[in-house]
Amino acid sequence: MKNFPDNFLWGAAMSAPQTEGQSSNFGKTATIWDHWFQTAPEKFYHHQGPEITSDVYDHYLEDCENMQAIGLNSLRTSISWARLLPDGKTVNPEAVAFYRRYFSAMRDHGVEPIINLFHFDTPMWLMARGGWENRESIDAFAFYARTAFELFDDLVNKWTTFNEPLVHVECGYLYQYHYPAVVDFKRAVQVGYHTLLAHKAAVKAFKEVTQTGEIGIILNISPTYSKSDTEADVLAAQRSDLLNTRSFLDPAVLGTIPDELLILLKENELMPATKSEDHALIKGNIVDFIGLNYYQPRRVQAQEKPKTPAQMPDDFYQPYDWPDKRINPHRGWEIYPEALYDVAMMMKNDYHNKPWYVSENGMGVAAEETFMNANGEIEDDYRIAFMKEHLSYLHQGIREGSNCFGYHAWTFVDCWSWLNGYKNRYGFYRLDLATRKRSVKKSGRWMKQVSENNGF
Ligand code: BGP
Image 1 (spheres, rainbow, N blue to C red):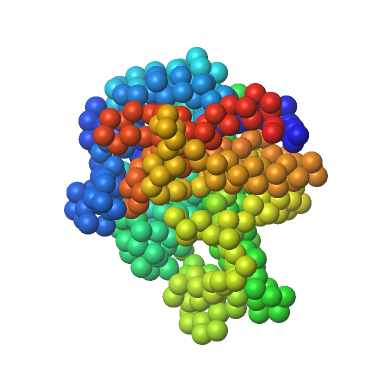
Image 2: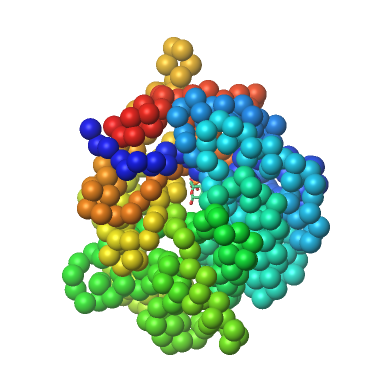
């Protein structure tokens, strides 16, 4: 039996744009996803867009009952910025009423809400002004954050500012998976820098509004493993961690941007525009906790033909295809549960043992109906095995003193995924696309036992 610490959070994660639906109703204005789907639907798997998703807007009560039914004691979702503040300034009363009903229902069902403010869903009104490239985005986000804290402070104790803040940077400004699908390293760094300052400004606002709750940020973590111990491969791995991990984790927890990162940016003419007051904002406003989304490791080797100055991150390191890897063929991601132990030790040793939790971990599988039994239940034993393996390594890290307070699976009910639509399913509950009906999978029933026993 692997026992977890008292009051361990067992739960799941989701986001407003992937689950809420009613994306152009009840006062909500367009986000980049609504806009992109309207203008370029061919980019989206099976032309599946963000209008309906799992329609939590209408199913939230049933969903809260279902959370309780599988033993979840916590759940993370986000507020839609474009719903709460349709023009960035004016509060939408329908949004307030909806979120208050939703968060209250969670609490009534014994589920602690962890509420995130941004999950890749830049409002179009901000995009029209240059999005995160515009320094005004910092104040705009801080205003939104403060508004949300004031409106929902009585219902929410744990807040997070951004989900995976590197992702809208790299997908929007390097790899073309998010609107505006620009390829420009220098602009990407500027977007990242403003995002970091927006996070810091939101933490500052939080400490001014409330003394009782806690605030954190959710980062994607793909610990880097180098192909070999040669100096060049090890340097490539260090640079990968600088860009992909330490760029947000160091300022969030330690209040510093690593010197090595600043040198790398300067040497490659990538320094963003800054202001003198930024230093104090970054130094202070430390988070209370960290959420880490872990799916797969990153394996790198030295870049054989780097461009100088660098045009893309892979001028600093080149992906390395480890021949012994296990892979989830549906998503194409490596399965490497051992990394959760390494992450736990990293938090303990390099980040003052800051309280943290696994804020996402999961396995997306296509055509899950293949695994439906005669009673109509999806027998997702592969998902149970995946979680058990990851939880085992996490457990080892906790036993060795890492301050981890929870594990959230991605996700609760199968949901819409960006450019992949409903192809890969991750939920404890299956979503029927024709009826929006939810039905529990075997993994959901398994999670109930885990949560009841506080271990497995
Ligand atoms: C995380 C995101 C989620 C979710 C998940 C699964 O990075 O925070 O929003 O989408 O990945 O990935 P995908 O949906 O691309 O399969």
